Image: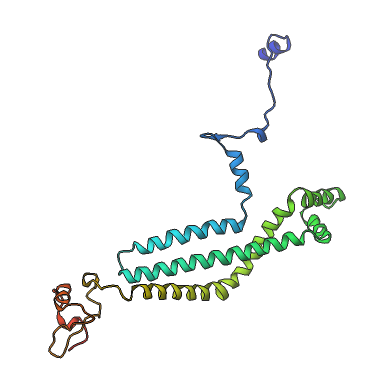
Length: 238
């Protein structure tokens, strides 16, 4: 009551302006968060798939190549498959999502389609609400937004089939191509016996239970590689 009396008698004057939350844009180290979020909102689903695909093509093969629990050849084959899978999945996702979004966007240029969508998305069934929704679709950027949402949903349904009909066979084909190229490039490379494991069947024993000289690798190198391995475990002989 005291504060109210003081204010009424003119002793206290407070200039208070209305707070408009829509004008408030917090900054982070000089970056306007509102601008960043506005740009992020314009990223379409096929652009998101592109970013994920590129990241997968770089990161997953690198992880496979650093897997020291398997031999170098297995690491390379695994990296090739990861690269092929990431690339094919990215390409299929971009084509399907982009195609669906473009088809919806083209379809919304038809007045009948716009009318149907306006009725579905209007706040209520009044003519004013439908007209407002229709204007948003045609002039307010609504066509692009609805095309992104509807196209993405349609693409998810289509990709349930393309994963088996397209991704799997194309991934296998591309993996074989990459492995074949890798084999052709390395078929003349010298073999380092130190890289071989005891399970490798590259060396074999002859009838006298001696290590045979195979493809120019010296017997001494073979024996050094397997000095702690019994001859009968190397394979090829009795």
